Length: 89
Image 1 (tube, rainbow, N blue to C red):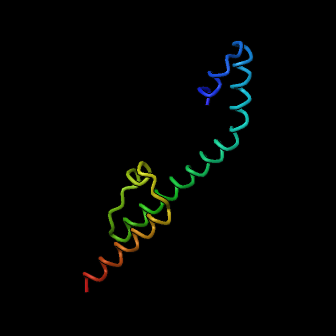
Image 2: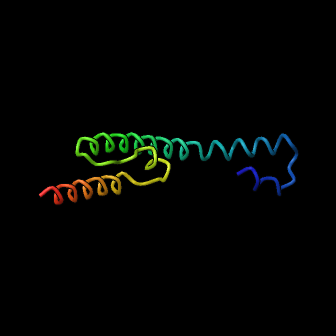
Image 3: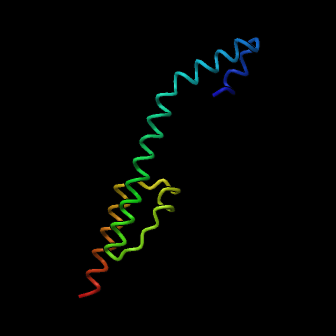
């Protein structure tokens, strides 16, 4: 972000002001992205708890780090649970 402003050769005070304006302009987007990711992380933890109840191993920390979506995680857990059920017959 600030790297783009380096090329403009602004006086230091104007450069700081320009950086502040850019930060303010994207602050809402950053807050929304963080909020969305917090919800995703919480949902992945819930899925891990549900997976354990189904007897399926699901590592929420790995899922969070890898960026897996909640839908993909849910699909994986349900598929593993169904496969486990099929083998039990």
